[in-house]
Length: 171
Image (spheres, rainbow, N blue to C red):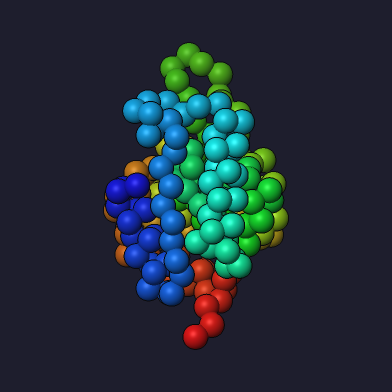
């Protein structure tokens, strides 16, 4: 939750008057480096969002999002969580091919399954690939790789431009 891209996206949202709740993935809390199976991640995520929507975020539009694996979770659970938008940082479209192995399958179907406005911010040299724009999907290419440690100004600008169109804040 302290990665530069998440901190930058959080700062951008707060600057636009949008509340942010940062959630650590359960496998990270448990001290593991590898994520749990998708079904477990998705179940944990929908439980957290339901808790927040019933409490601190009651009545507010929910924009879900995450970086890398968390972006995949946000996409897969956009409908069941009632998200009005999805923010994906470094979406892992296709794992890099290992020597001698067959190419990994694309995860584009997870992005294509999202029916609400989606912003994907991807490093120009991300070894996981560059997703295409779609009907409800804006893709912003920033300098850097999958870590999104560079190009933070462009990342912040993209988030600040997109958020008010998805969840306008009334003063």
